[in-house]
Length: 217
Image (cartoon, rainbow, N blue to C red):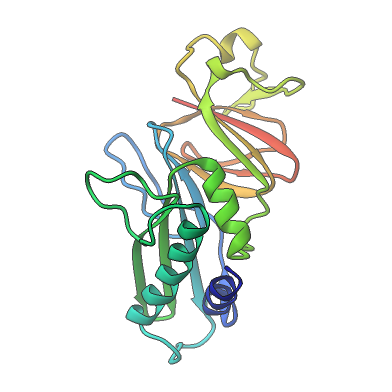
């Protein structure tokens, strides 16, 4: 996928200032995806947003051109994974490893939203497209019943140290384990974070380098 990677990287990064973060979300909450981020839903589905703002108005491509280049990269990745040569999921069909959800180009700001069959596909696709808005090398999503990583200390959003019994009180509490730095958005409210994670609001956290864990409900 070298050609697709090079084209997508040049398209998104050559004349852009990349931002990291995400929009507000709540119970009736819609992910605004105003800034580059990884989103994990209550169903443990993974999406990502790549948002960039050029220093000047970009006359080199249109929204249609942006969408075409992004689709080419997605199709190449899916083919490499042995999936259909498609860029978008279709109702009733098996979910693609990576799918383009939407493309938007307004003024100097462009936004690409991607959906993934698995958390692993996010990591692999980001690596293939040389996405430098995060440094994630591993991403896992599940529940605390899968087992919280050993050796981590957790705090509440108020900064209070959490006991292990608090973390596992509800076996269905959602868990994100990430290696690398990124901004993570969660559909449910964040309840506990491991040391080093910075929370910007009840649905948004920034992870440091190394392995971190976020719990949400």
